[in-house]
Image 1: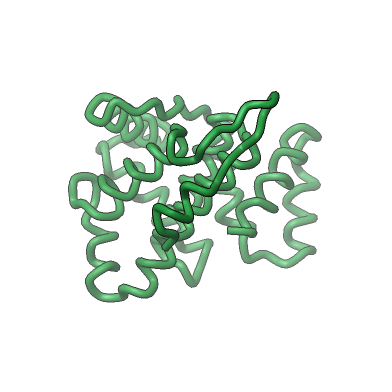
Image 2: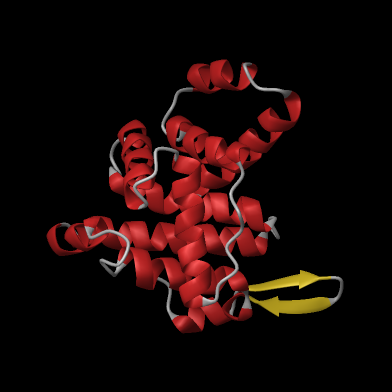
Length: 188
């Protein structure tokens, strides 16, 4: 994983002002996800089991989440898109070798975490808990955002034909957003 010295060098120049990744909410989101989801059993003990039994996979997952927040910062993505990218990165850790199974496990986690029948309520409950306890500002997830997270997980390892087929069923703004986010997600 990148050192603090390497992270200090990550900057964003915007309107003649320089912004540091370490002073951004993106880094705060990474720390919140890392400390309270990946390295704690407060939300789930699943990632602690991966850390104990398969440390190399856990390290790669942690690096992917960090990279997702760095990309969100450097590309100046909206908070919703940055959150989607970071969430897709940690959700892919449920089953790193099979993105479709990871999507199913992510859905199962969301419905069982808050004992809700609706995954959208589950993810927003998780964010509300993060926001309340950690004083973070994770965005409210809309239904189309949750669908995009599922779609990213589904299409991460898909062939060009499968991606084309899936994208052809979407309206133009959703297709464009999915293509952009999938390209970023695959670059992690």
